[in-house]
Image (cartoon, rainbow, N blue to C red):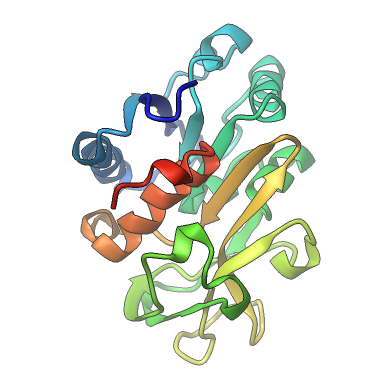
Length: 233
């Protein structure tokens, strides 16, 4: 693929169980990023039958947008594995951590399985100092007063040594978290030949109209596509 050519992104938003009302806003905003930057094109679907080796081959990045529950059968999940292992990128957003709750490989792909969240309230998002210069964060500082569901995970993300943490929640600024004083919320990793970026933020429609948040999503897409050098922002 030429460095200056458009690449293709597939947004996948199938749910089984709870469904986030912000899914349409997320799709619109990612499409708007594509229109504005002219770096990639977007297809959006909830049809898991499209997860085949031949169909996924056309995409550089799959965005798992709020996917919850048992969203893939075994052949579809195998197609996703092949996509990643042949260099594909995955951006997983918020509820995607609650996808495939009993599948170990999917949990490793996203980085950690969702456990619970307290009632949504404003809180403070902190930058991970050791990764503050990473491409995904090069647009951003921390954020006070960000309202979201402050996700906790079944296993602490720090225990997954493959993850590189980008953002944490200041646990003094919200109530009910189960991760202790160290509350990771976003990370990236090199994974089985591909790249993945996960953000636990993004419950509300307002996130997808927020430049601070959407700049991270854009840079996550570019980084997982291995196209960070094409950034024109």
